[in-house]
Length: 278
Image (cartoon, rainbow, N blue to C red; front, side, top):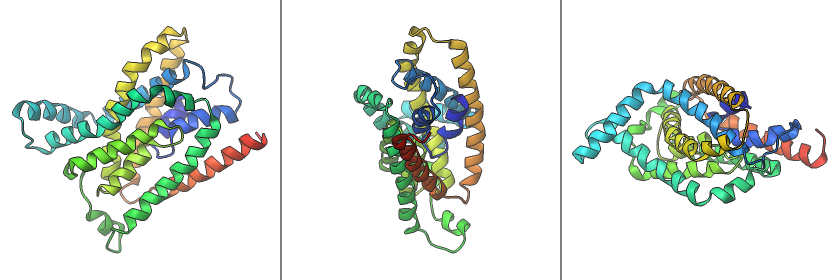
């Protein structure tokens, strides 16, 4: 589970959807409806967040420093200060919806059918983002096409709120947080690689906040904590490797392959579950 979470969290294929669907297809003994399942997933996410903090450690120092500097001064003067405020605006929608919809969201985790269905929806979203993006691209080569679009620090605060609102969709198992936020970044006018960077930076405060809420429940349930921590370490290692790969991939790559994968995986999962073929 740790390796599965870490490998799929940053790829736009929904780690949560895989975490709900794969154990059901493989007939693993635990149940997604168990009280400890969501806290366990949050612990794995903390491994991912740690990997992102390590990957972007230099940027996070500048972002945190820029946030306090801009807040005290009451004005943004540098790219780091502007990026800090953009991340704050992008974090608010997911934080608010997470608080008010937590109980309803948790009820969806027990259904692999729901996860498989939303995987199909996620794939359609990935393809849709790229269809819209292609309408605004000019030039023959991928370098020329990408050069028209902006860095993360240059988008508007309205666009950052849009990307944050897209992130809130990832509370649904099967909808990829990284996928919808990268897609939201594309709609906001970011280059693919910059959309991925903004997505990964935006993930960190939301994951850490979820950890503060859910981890006390995990330690109350009498689970094998050392095994769970080991799983989180594996998740972090896999996430670090995934992030490094994706940042290189999105220099010229698109969301299309992941969209087709999610549609195929979701339909295959629904068929296997319905007909009992696995």
